[in-house]
Image (tube, rainbow, N blue to C red; front, side):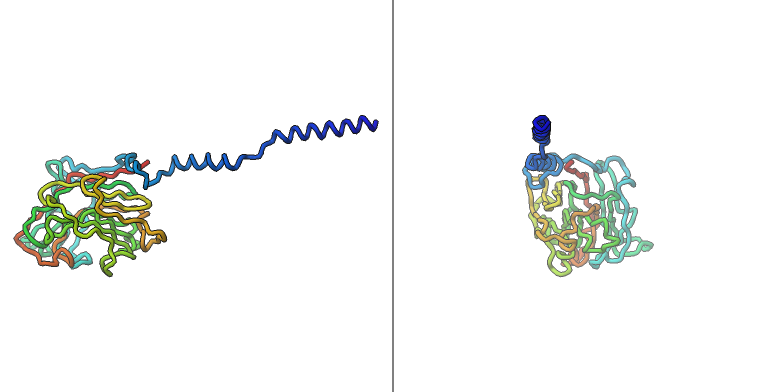
Length: 296
């Protein structure tokens, strides 16, 4: 009995040992590598050389037909100076036209006594907003005749109604003042960087000799890490604003949704810095298209 019992105990230990050796703990190294590879497939690196090659068109307005799309645009109106002592009265009609494949925004000297303001113009806001992507607007600026116009293609944070400006953030894809012909400017504004205290982040004046005579593509490459401004081609980068290492809502409000604005201002703190020549009106900016591409 004793030998038989001892034999049974030894057999049990042997079988238990064999069974335990077949239960393997997860290989933590293999698990991390597998998970890492999966993440790399989902989260693409905005700094990769081919990152923007994968961008696909998600929204556009080609301005075909004869009417402005009510689904895409709304008019912002008023003659309150717009925070810059501007002279124009923005109206919902009489200053825009869609024809021959382009949108035309025209600033006019006011000869109608029933309309308030010395000048009239239009300011369009997109009804759709976007977070990150390649944004491109193809446009031709008003013929240069003299000082006083201030056309812009730009973006504002969609939270402007609650956060206010400049905390909402602003991206100026193209700004032009006619007292500086053949030049354009690219600028970002935030609470930490804005023109009211001289801390705006800007390209300064960029030479573009045919800006008033020919259509050009004004675009940004906007990711979680940077905003890059280009002209005509995405390789022709003119200005880069990188996300600060210690980013906050004050210095990087650019991880929220933004909407587009297109307008021609008259005069103002910058546009009217060297006066307004009433003989230059009407002044028309033409927009061929606006397109948004995003990386899936």
